[in-house]
Length: 410
Image (cartoon, rainbow, N blue to C red):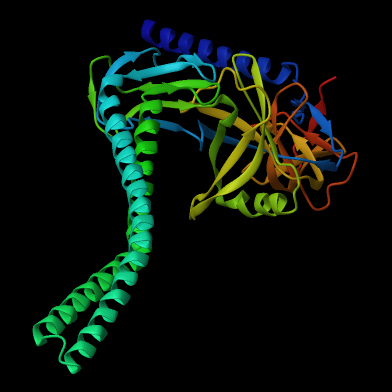
């Protein structure tokens, strides 16, 4: 009986608890349904203002010069003095290197002696010629007298007043005299050939003398222009050979910049230079700014592009040959383009416009980079269907898509 009472009490408690739960569930207050709102992204915009602008092209060039002077030794000699070091700035006429003059004096003296000898031989030849002319007249007179003697000897023999031996002696003397006249005439005729030969030798000797004197003058190497010493390849006491480079020098005003122009931009720049349109560039380092101008192109190209050679318009005082420089080339003007920051670009060819509070995708063509007045690098683009006054979304959104709702940041 006691056990049944416990079971009955448990059932009553269970039913009472279940009834209370159901009552509370039915009588609880009802929560209103959650309202789903579309998220709005805050963005910055920039108005489209199409106009004619020049894109820029970043290039990397090397400073060089077509007028690098390589001063060579004029002859075999010993270096007596070296007055400069690499990197020194020199003035025109300044002594750079002196070779030992004792290596040059013997060559000059020998060449001068050869000239004097040939001048003396030419003077002797002219005197000989005058002597031959005078002797020739006398020898011809002697020939006439000899022939007259032969005639007398013949007449006397016919009259039996002379002997055959006397006639033979007269004939022999006449023949010897005629032979001597012939030799003298040949010597006179040969005068011009001998004189020409001697004069040619004199020209060679004078040329050797001038070369030796020039080598002697060049034994003192002086700067032919204001410039910078690019390198010194000898030291005092060195023995140098003819043609050996001793020093390299360049003029600062002759510096230019060589840079490779990528193939996609090669044709438009070549056309601009052919039309004599100024193609300018700007480079700067540590606050220094120098303007460049595209002057010409290299004689060879390859599939990657062609090398352009730029004149330096400003003062290149802080430039050195061989220096690598980054600079920006101003390309020819493009019409109906507008600049945008790079963060406004999606996928390389897509931007978004703001229309009725939502983003709308537009396909664009990238023309090149553009430098803002503040020095920022933006992208210069054009696109079909984009009009003046359209609003470009310049805030980059990772989930950007057409129809995305946005609002402008005030």
